Length: 290
Image (tube, rainbow, N blue to C red; front, side, top):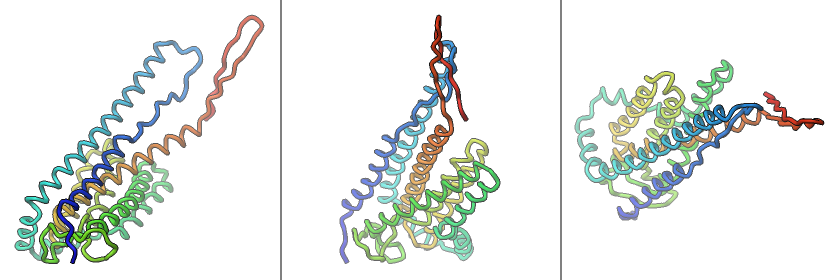
């Protein structure tokens, strides 16, 4: 068995975190657009429009900063948990395992399986389209996309680290390093990744209209992660890494969705500006086609 040093394993993980932060920081804020500027508007009106658009830009930048702060905090929490929490939590959970806890974990476990949640997400998107419910449709599309993205990232990380699971009897610092072997694929937890990808998608769509949705969605996703610790299938840091991958995948999918949606809406509108010359005066006519 080849054992990769702890330093190299941490380096690979934080390289993923760094790439995620860089992609978030460099994500372009949607361009400021003014759908219609009618001929004859006063400068005060134009100034008001510009101020509104500037406020939107500021809000979007604030969101990016918050996401970066969340990722950095998550990386710090992961390091502390790896050093001081992983093994004590594993020993405590294993020694206090109960049949009731196992039954609860059995109920929660399917909520983290990709082959269950992806068809459900696709069905949700299709139902939203049929019912002409834009929010339901968006939630389904985001969940579907984020599950696919997070699954790819999770699979790549599993084969990069090849971390030993707690039920193998090894300590939490055993990593075999990059290979295509199906053995020892503990980091990150794919169940937690899927659960948080779905939870973040749903929470992002309904957080303003129904503030109770995010706590419920993230609460269920957290329980899915805890069920994997209860089953001795993952370390606590596996669950934290899965939550981060799921969250970032969903937020990235949301950004792409909103960007494409904006471009499609803009394509449905055409602003035709035509000069109108005259003998003694001239003018400009504007026609907005929806």
